[in-house]
Image (cartoon, rainbow, N blue to C red; front, top):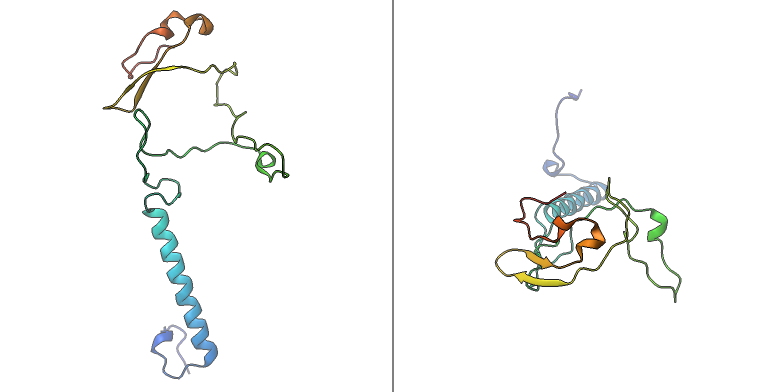
Length: 145
């Protein structure tokens, strides 16, 4: 009588049926695929498009070299396929941040890019924002509010 606690390795069995051989090959293929997927997620190659992958490009001055991952709480209906001829909508256009005041957005003209750091200086009319402190350059560690 066989002991149920005895583990028999499939690759150690010498007289395998064709079904056993196919099953073993299928399991090995699945294992290899899962290992490759795990490695791709843990260490994605540059420019692969996988979130968190290193960027594979030369960004313009003042632009972040790594493309950040953004998680937007989007309605699935907004992402559905568009009929031909329709304008493609921008995902997240109507999304807001928690506790954000839903006011009109204003384009800010970039005045200067700083090459050493990821930084840009923009100018705007402080009267639009009802706060004269918003027209001052800050050190980056302090944002008036």
